[in-house]
Image 1 (tube, each protein chain N blue to C red):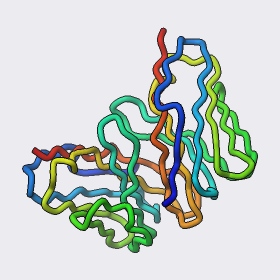
Image 2: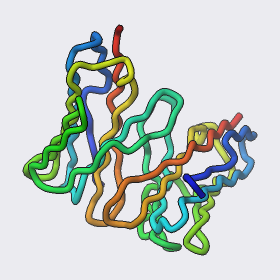
Image 3: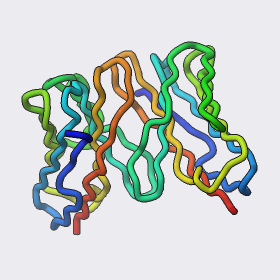
Length: 110
Length: 114
């Protein structure tokens, strides 16, 4: 079945350093979404990418969707303690099922 | 309602008992999803609904799990003869339509099977 993988599983960074998480799907996706889950909370939507090669920015966050629509990345510039949490990518197949990656847990050391 | 509502928020049950978890999606949202999240783990897809129908039930872990959605709104996830490995947070999400759009999550139902 369809699988969505993410690396790394954990990332510890010093405040001010950059952070990147990578997402790969075993199948071509119709779109990909990114979510953030704070400790003890539920996932909250960040962004959706639809087009091949699409790049979107939200302040210090940059999201990319690969040309083959099978991979994506999230890059955070100059991390802050408010960035702490787990970042999930979620791929939507043509059958509308939304499959989440295992997530990357980000810790920021002040 | 204003957001996705799930109940109960916490449920402790004994092994072998049945449990029902309820999800009330955002009004007008036609797609509804159930996920399971074990401690420190990712979101395991269980089932999704388009209106009242569930096109894909392949994510349900066993035949002890079932789900239904009535009136295109409220959904119930039922776990029969609960086992300790069923302990997890069960998350429900809804979205406006089937092909695109963000998922809005509820706070989850934390199930503990003793």
